[in-house]
Length: 207
Image (cartoon, rainbow, N blue to C red; front, side):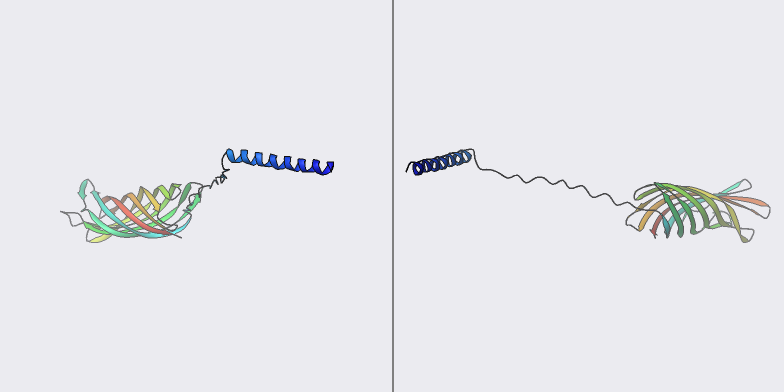
């Protein structure tokens, strides 16, 4: 009888303690579960490669003059289409390669019978790539044609310039380029040196 009484008193005490603890927990307010914040790393920007074959079309604004043994004549400003093809190598941010470039135009020298047409260049290029933007310069060999002494005459020399290209997709790019060509030839005993300047808009594809 005594053991039963002790067990009953002990159970009652446990129940009382449980009730008191529960009441204290409820009194302190409901327990709120906070979802841990998940940190998501930003996706890295896509890295563009300028290495490989490329080609495209251009449209140029052309101007210039000829110096024929001290007689200087300016050509009419002209515009014309063109085409280019080349290959780039890339080492880190440095891009270098070669390009064949053709510009089609045919313009007179007002007041003279002479005309100037076309320009063909073989260029060496080197530039700096800032992901999908390429800044570059170039030098190369150049040829053009001038009409004099009743026929068309080839002029040869060099060209140089600066440009910038921008990848609008992984393959396609647009560009802007400024070029100077200095070519010359001896025509019937007269040295004709021509300077041809142009600004070209370029649209191309990198393979």
